[in-house]
Image (cartoon, rainbow, N blue to C red):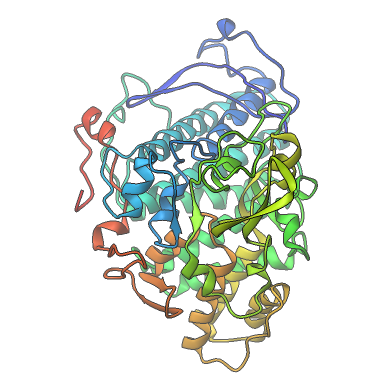
Length: 503
């Protein structure tokens, strides 16, 4: 699913949001939107396919970057392990300084895009069953819709806590036009229910190299959901560690996914949707000439890239890079990070950039030859499944051979010695530390910090309480940073919403 097309379909309303179906599928063609109404649209198999494609669109909404920053950065800056050179990206700076407000556009982008995706999923789930078409294809389409609805809600409930729970189409006469916030447990119940439906009814293939949702992606997300439910804020019980362990084991034992041998394959278009990549946001230079991410991975105006927008939007905190073990391959130049690059004006000349920048998702060909990048954005990869399995297994029964194997495979790729002979407590923190280092700058770390109520002290290499943790550059986390603020625009348009504490 590397080609992105625009498909227009009926407009649906959810609160203050106007929802327009916009699809991304490589075989769809342009369609005349004037011929569609809510009465005649969901009548043909092609309508079902187009409706599902629309739900994928909002996977891209929080990605990218430019001189205004990008929404995906907000969870990175709230770890204290990322920094920015971009003075005009005030929303990045406010979060970096722990001075976030309800007017921050990053949170608003998450809220609007995810509820738009949920609205499109709700409409598809309600209407596709009535279309006469092949039952197997119908179930696969419904499985994709339910997975994506679960994905969007999983982000929302972790970012904002109690959020409106809307699981059916909404119009101007609906009682859910201005919904109240629902208990966190209710949100998780819907997420689990959707993913269990996918497992039991969808018939999706275990992996899908087109980039669509697969059974492997559904099991990965469900394992992650179970692990989160075992932690804060729900603390639903040790049985959720067992569920997370067993679900992650299903992905591992499928032998459909594996760790790449070379870190370069994480940023290689030829390996997208294969190997380590379980589920990705799709891009294609034939349709969209860049994914926006490349702009923010280069330092501010140092003349190294063919892209005119060298924003310095995000870079790695030096203390964090220094916290890796000696000899860790991930800290070698141009593996996960870089601090040298050739000049755009003379590629025979190399510039020391003065700090560590993120190379993990860098597209060097785009920066030096083409000025366009179609690299996909990874959402779930096999390394994360290994960490889920190891952590959950350790909580259930302490260090086991298979738990060690899961983590040591990742350490082996980094050219580090195997972990062995650890107590349960020692292994727990070793897994966390390894995950912090492997999954860095992938929108994973802050969610783990909140789930565990733990933060990583990059100076000492130790973990400490989230509330009261001081970033290396000064600000101190308080209880309010366990959630992001409900966007001010939503509070103004929906009198039934309340704000999170401290904002």
